[in-house]
Length: 205
Length: 119
Image (cartoon, rainbow over all chains, first blue to last red; front, side, top):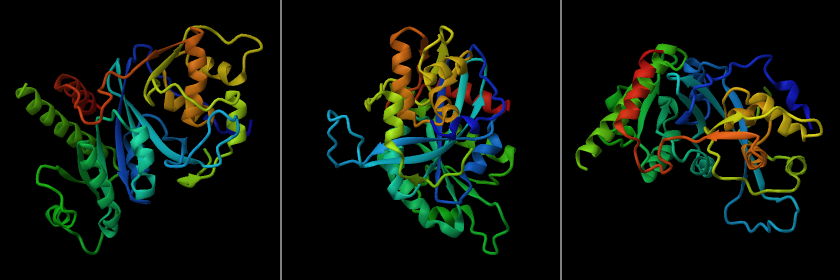
């Protein structure tokens, strides 16, 4: 093996023995928008990094020949963890939002509760594809605008909503991804939204 | 933790060595399926299997096992399949809906909200 074992943290915080249900929330956004910062601010563990080996779609791979697939690509992603109570553990995944990574999202994050699209107003182009894919999948999401520095031009949430062509039913929230209380507020905004959707759906049953 | 680029080309040879040439993972292991050891490592056991059993003395999610071992999630799923088949681990699968299109029930979400507010 390579040096992977020497990279292990000196100690890790175990989950409670009663933990039984893992839940997922995905944070998507462009490069450098603050996904890992957001995960770190609310996580009970130092964010960890892992990788998934992907075989490129549309390329024939003969799985019976015993040879390594030449088309293998490795995609890395970060995650953090929040123990919600004795039984439930929430995992937060930071996923790159660029178009070329969405095969990863499709594969890894099925079954997620919902998503946070983290937006940097200086690079809003990075957000469009993520929003389009989430809508296509029917995955509920909120948009969090990371105000991590004093932008000379400060767009209002309504201006950003228009720029992103975001429907009125999608909640938006300002945040500072570095601040725990702010990150927590983003997650609560998302789960409140999910709860509203679930309640409305249950009322029609 | 080694900083990585979002995409790099892996080393398939290393991964094939660990999994004995297998590439098909047990898809029933979600990223957040919690794994618990049911027995201690035994002498002669493959080191990755032994390491998983040590790690999972308390519940550990599949994705955390992958991060701790420095192995791709797919490879960890294959190794976990071996351990599950031989009864050395048990798996606590997520309760949330497997389909992205279907919402979990409002009672579960209420519990999540409560947990978040208490952070």
